[in-house]
Length: 415
Image 1 (tube, helix red, strand yellow):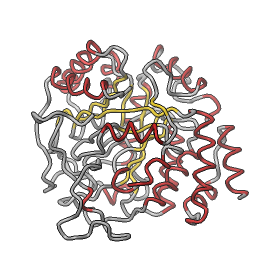
Image 2 (cartoon, rainbow, N blue to C red; image 1 turned 90 degrees about the vertical axis):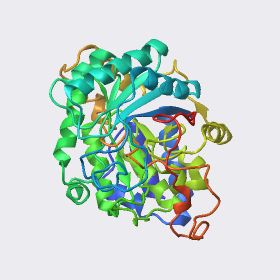
Image 3 (cartoon, rainbow, N blue to C red; image 1 turned 180 degrees about the vertical axis):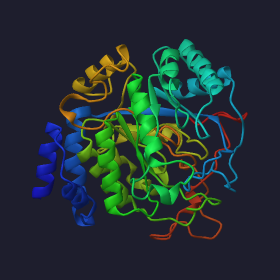
Image 4 (cartoon, rainbow, N blue to C red; image 1 turned 30 degrees about the vertical axis):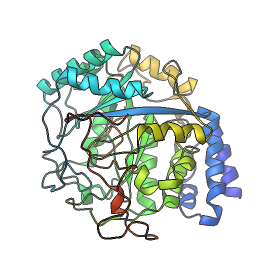
């Protein structure tokens, strides 16, 4: 297929596809799906080999958020039966993080619900970062605390944070349809604040909220322009008790096309499969590893994920390997720029990676790439109460389980 040959050539050169080419990837047929995966897989292997980076989420403060993001189980007005608790103490968060590191996680993502942190909250998170680094000096720490005020990114960086997550989530044109309490521009501003402070930026999207192909392409190209180092791709989990509870729009095949399109547009960045992979990719999860080079290990913010042991077995069985703590995730041309940003925050050129190819920095509004409440379950009851489990093309509500273990509970975490 000429389209795929063109996209592979561009991906290996870090050249941007056209918008029409990106749309064409989403429009490919199921008959061509394996060819699409193989083509995007060539780009993924060129920049990242067969390494898979593991990330682990710690929900520092759960529920009771004043924002009205329609996709989120922690939103204002949500009736989802999730865990609700205030800030974990630094020692509690450090212990939770240690479980993920023991399971192979290279990065720990510290997430807190809310519009954005107060200065006192930044102090809390700074103490938590220091506690984690004292216990596991080599681990990367990413904070995801919502919208940042001036100076807060610099304070997090000084405390030892390596990255900041704030997702764009959807296209600018449709953002007002999912959230009214803040704007798309607010999110862009936070990503730029993180980048300017020398933090590695992480910013991604949520697919499956009823958006069009054009919306998906728009948000991925917007991410490329922001140049984050990591791009989490979430697949909406329609939590009962949220406005998007009935939005079951994804198939495993569509999820693979979305990941492939993201890889072609952002060829040399960490593309992470985030919330929703177990529910929507299901048995095709191993194929997605040919497109993305990063996943979350274990549970998500408010919902359960596939067993950590199953994640590790999947990676090995698919012919991949877990990225070690001593390995550099990003290709050299990006890693060198990131190192320069870290040593001279705010210096001219930071965040404008060599050649302009790919995406960079990281920011995320909903949970370090796993939008709040978007995580899902791999070890769940065999059937839904309404008998819908296994129905071809039907909603898989049986695969959505509220997290009842790990952070905020007395039950051992899934790592």
